[in-house]
Image (cartoon, rainbow, N blue to C red):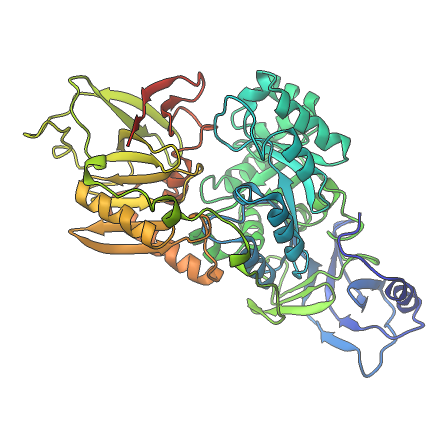
Length: 587
């Protein structure tokens, strides 16, 4: 498939530049080029015509006054990086993520669409088409499920919505499929989505953490072609054995890559063309180090040969998605996505050429990109949803009912279990957390159904007075704290910001992180979002949060595809059985 179109005149000129009959538009001279197809470095010339590479070889191209000559003596040239599994909505958005990616050498993104799905399909399509104008090539997944437990399929995750999304030309795969329990129950909509993806010639990505060989066999039989959930070298091997691609991950919530690389080396497992690398939608603080350039660096430092790391971040995903005739290598006919490095072991590029243009240098963009008009899109408005409701401090107190209190214990950043605890009661008949600073009240508010779910949480922090967040996997709002007044103030401030995260202590705001786009992400540039997220993470760390990623913890408290218990609008849910352990109540 064509990633970017080419007209007849440009196509003909490409031939003439390749034959040295017309001058090149760009000549990259003197670089040692990585041929990812043969895993060798060669000092050759690269001639570019328009957006594409016309020639790679020993002969100098024809030039003229208009030819841009890039002096690359002593530099190393590698293909533009491909992120095969991006989640471009972790406080940042697909446009700011693309800008950030381009400056650091990632020239193709395969992105999740989940947080766009609150919009009408015409607006989702409009965003995807606007992103097609960006120098970074960005494709999307069609989600088959909303990452939330459901009793029946509803738009846009019904047959019509799934089919329409899969048929869009900017959608390159189905997935990632998180509702495996639904598949095992032979949910007709999920099975339709998997088969439809395959029928229209698109990949189908799974999500199988800790899966047995039997589960992987069943997934492969259905048509699942890749999984990024390997935690050990044996996990990688098991996915390869059933014919899947294995995507090696290094993310803020699963920094597994050093363990995987070392395990593969110790086991003597050869590097495979069916392995890829991903940063898997890390939250902003991790991207302080870079995007795919950082992922490649981690792989190399763990012992992966550089040529293998570069191939896993370029050619291998291009082949997987069927776009290797367009991207993924430095070869004639491909889009001229070329990175100049100072040395083979230094993956952060000194210069970025994308679509035949010098687009970035020393981490700075040199070309205009695409800026959306966010007011054109009907993202849910937090302030509008709450306009008929007044925040009450009584929401954030738990009345003693004479029975043990449900306590959600964080085993790590995302995995939770539930215990029952007998907690003291204050003079007004409310459950008291005074004797244990690691406990906090966890409240979930559904503004549409006007329902409230309460639990106690252990492990998010110590002496946390009040934190409110609209950044959740569901459309609900999460409030955590030990002081009802601070919790109410934090939620009120989040409403005034039209979404985001706020923290209050002693009647004052100590942190405000506006996320006005659907309450989940920001229109601000990536650097500003990184700064904002680092301030949040720093404060939560000061409060004793010991797990890997406190942002993902907020997101996943409501995600019913993760074990073992989740908090939802219906109540506290046991994930495996779907049983409501503690029901919610009406506000």
